[in-house]
Image (cartoon, rainbow over the protein chains, first blue to last red):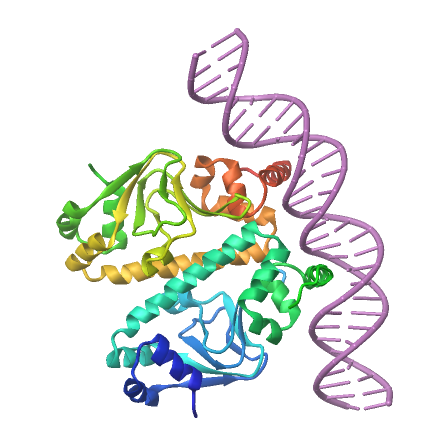
Length: 197
Length: 197
DNA sequence: TTTACTTCTTATCAAATGTCAATGCAAGCC
DNA sequence: GGCTTGCATTGACATTTGATAAGAAGTAAA
């Protein structure tokens, strides 16, 4: 099984050489899920992270009325996880499932330590990912408290044009914090202003 | 100068012994700011984090129209920082200023490495703080995309009853992503329902 | 093909929230 | 005391967004 995206990730982002990659390759574990299948459900302890080799995942919470609040999408080369649950070994309150049939690489402690064994710089790269994640969340909060639905949608389209094309609109609406109907209206208004997607 | 909160933080959260604390004590640097004074302005590189020994700080962004979007408050024993800017050594897009006259401890690389020198566990505690921060941000996003202004306000009061009493309402409104007028109305509605703050 | 199902759109009405303006209130200052 | 200033509240009105229902288009299954 070849994993071009994961290979690229470890070499370009993780700083591993081609040779170091071959050393950790035997330890790689993958997990495939079909569309709608779950990788994590609320109540379970999230024991590891998932790297998306191919496909699309979503990370979401359910409120009391059963409405889904989508916190994140993940396409190729993204990592999804309830890091809090992994780190503190406590039950998660989130769900992860697949939007398309998806092939993931399982990033558990065992694998991470193999990678660190061959290249200790990987720890730093890992912290970099964490820091980037926080940055991203800051931006997300800033938009949610300060921008209109229209502005948030434009920002989304601009940042994730690929995701736009691969997930249904009602999920994008959930991500943006509005109803599918509202998103439809926003899109219509933009179309009238000659907005080209 | 005695710093009871910072001392408590290093010992209880950081895992240092009393003796280890005395060893790093000489390296502690503090910075005092008066109300409205800045600790960070957009455009500057945030070169370190601040631990709040006494007082209240706010962390916010400005949008194009000059409106403040408050991302975070920090009272005693909280740490504020644009971690992204610190880590990547890039200019920040955020502001930090004081709501009350505030005494902070400056957490720069030099100090952190002194702490790690006497107790290497501190690194792990530091990661714990990061992970908690992410958790907190997830919760914040979930509320912003899925809960009404009223629910967000109740959650805020419940989580930060102390902050409630120390910052003006218009700032809380900004934190919640609504106007001060709306917050006033939410409060009135709650008062009519016999809500006791 | 027909049927069922999902997604997206549209329309209507209601509720939530924003905008603008006026007022009241308390703190600080002369 | 009288004055200013900033904050909170209130009211009237506009805008945005939600709720509900209905319909159109596409897809998959029978």
